[in-house]
Image 1: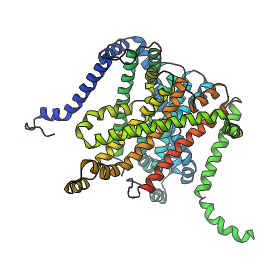
Image 2 (image 1 turned 90 degrees about the horizontal axis):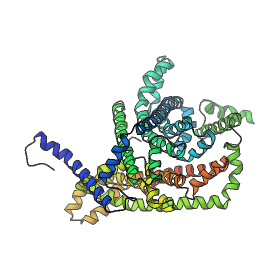
Image 3 (image 1 turned 30 degrees about the horizontal axis):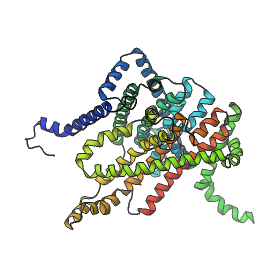
Image 4 (image 1 turned 90 degrees about the vertical axis):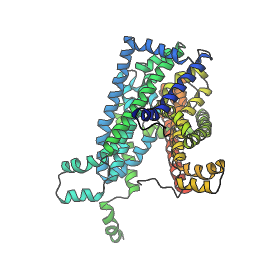
Length: 258
Length: 265
């Protein structure tokens, strides 16, 4: 691990990023070799995937489809946070309400929401609203669940002290409830980001076919394996980037956690 | 008679109801709200608690439903066995060898972060619209959470244990089986819990996508033909399975691994 050279910045950078670059290069090489030696319906080499990706990305149609998907993702996720966090706080504020709803929130958190998509389809049809509902349902329960968990971490003494100093309800929320639950809510937001992405693709696959989901569907129906690989790669990179973002948000607020 | 007992019992519950009672009230309120909203605003075919309860006896004795449930759960179990077998081996190797860890870490993380649903078009290209496509989806959905957790667990083995093993000249295999694996077990169970949930989702989405017979397809078919109450029984079963796995693993951790405590609880 330690390089023989003195601690120059270059060798440090190589030691840090070298293995990553190397494994990336090995992966690409493997992909290229396997792709060249199998049927193109099964797998296409990396170089061809990149060509297809470039061809796709440079069309304006793709741009609009990406905007479509992003709108869906952001709307659903924003609704989940804006509705989920206050609801979770409300549940957390009153111990008896929390005890009453906690098991059901847990059940809904563990239920595979994809199973509800057929119901949404037959009730609401093919508009934008049912798709937002899907993304919302995928992502709202982690937010509620974690916020309620955060409410659990508040020591009852804190609320008692606040009340014995005649704190107003508003001040109690501002000074105790929100600061104590926010790190937990952000853990929920991190989970919600990942789930919202799944919800977005699920909505685009199983409800009306639009956005990035439609691009994959069309490509797979045309046996255009290169384009399928290209879009999957794109969405995977997006998934990794969003996970990083979620972790960064979570860590930023984790400082508040005692 | 009641006058004598009433003040004694009423004093405490008046301030705080018992948790079990609160939960029962909470459940009842949710069901009533659902029933009321559906009755007031939704068309008659939409699932509501009274409707779902009414069809439960019919659905759970229905041959088609039982077959569908069996097929899906068997596929999930098969996929989980495959995912556990390969995932544990890969995870252990990653956890114990830094070179392998560095080579694979980014791929495992990447696949884990990837919304697994996007591989469906690819899986159907490769395996056709068959139950093999479902199995592949389940394995893909489940394996990476096992790999990452087992790798983390194998890495977290206390150094002292390994040193003791080395000073007693324990072989590599013996060290692996007797020291690394027990230390990684709680991590494995945490990974398995995630994997079971993801495997179930994988099975359902594969059935939706490729119209493969099973519980997911049962739900799809019944809701398309406006039998929402019947379809919802399938959802209840899925939820029960998800919650069941959760409960099984957490009680398993508590009973089998009493020495292990999760921090912060």
